[in-house]
Length: 73
Image (tube, rainbow, N blue to C red):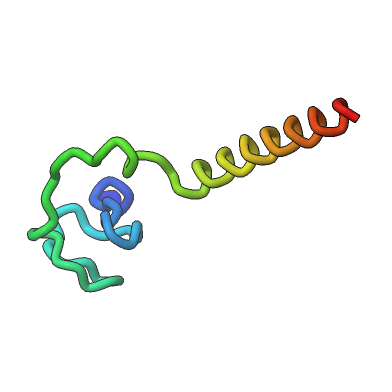
């Protein structure tokens, strides 16, 4: 029996746990009470990537506005 095939990740702490587990051994969350409903639109995005992309877009917008301001002089 392979250990890798009988393992899955905890939805709360993302640590590996047994496939049929009802309680996570790492964060002690009750896996039976966690519903398997579909995530919302914004919950599907990785927060680091979304924040990084927003920062880049904000920096570009501020740069363009500063560039336009100096062109008027």
